[in-house]
Image 1 (cartoon, rainbow, N blue to C red):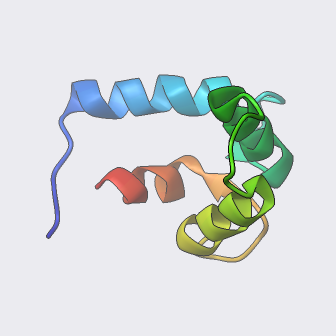
Image 2 (cartoon, rainbow, N blue to C red):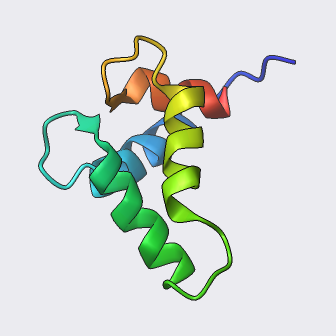
Amino acid sequence: MKISLNNHQIEDLRKFFQEVDKDNNGKIDPQELRELLETIWEKETDIDITSAVQSTFNKCDRNHDGFITFDEFVSLAD
């Protein structure tokens, strides 16, 4: 099922994306995602963060360049 995002939702996603994209290159790399997950889970989890990063990249990185662009990121929520 395809869900259309409104402008406000897209802007919220853009702000979140920019917070994760620490080097401001317009892409999320595996290390930036790892840092986010470590912050969220506070290293107090049974979840394998390496596997979570790889799984996320498998789902999001559609062109397999090793980065998640904003368009790829939005496709998760869209």
